[in-house]
Image (cartoon, rainbow over all chains, first blue to last red):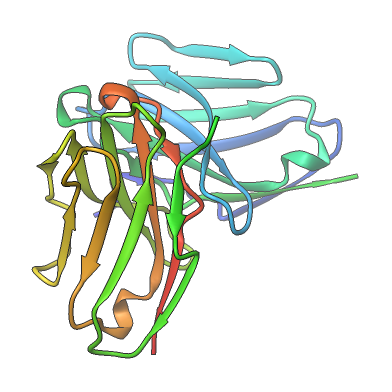
Amino acid sequence: DQQVKQNSPSLSVQEGRISILNCDYTNSMFDYFLWYKKYPAEGPTFLISISSIKDKNEDGRFTVFLNKSAKHLSLHIVPSQPGDSAVYFCAASKHNAGNMLTFGGGTRLMVKP
Amino acid sequence: GAGVSQTPSNKVTEKGKYVELRCDPISGHTALYWYRQSLGQGPEFLIYFQGTGAADDSGLPNDRFFAVRPEGSVSTLKIQRTERGDSAVYLCASSPNGGNEQFFGPGTRLTVL
């Protein structure tokens, strides 16, 4: 069973508008969540993270929101830029499990100029 | 500084052959992870090293898969009697002291014919 799910395989957004990528998880033991960005033929690159003791973390154009009761997190990118076009992976970890990451299936974001 | 490097970048082999995939982590990173990413999916955890020892190998799919990290730096993932279903991108990541943020290499694309 998939413990981390990204239900939207793709998302298309106009340049300058907000991109919202969603992620759901089922395992209540997860206590740290990360977003990775991946370009073709490259490895995933860390983008932003959030601990389960917080509900929001912001870094420039990127904000991650965590709703623990709903087991849901989202990544907001505003304003979106064409260079943001990539596949975005949501990942979760348990602090006492060596921090191995459990990934969602990814969402391909396309930002149109 | 140098990131995580993986060799080869591409490997094509025939069913039943043995392959070795190499990972060179970021200098000083004690934790090293192997993941496997099949087409259209997110990376899946295989094995985690802390120093020279495998702290968690619960993600290895079967006993054809084995990994070593003899000196606590470079790691080799070994696959015996390869099968077509082993075709995937094999990703390596490292982190300082098993911290939450993992730094990924570009991956090795394995194709089993």
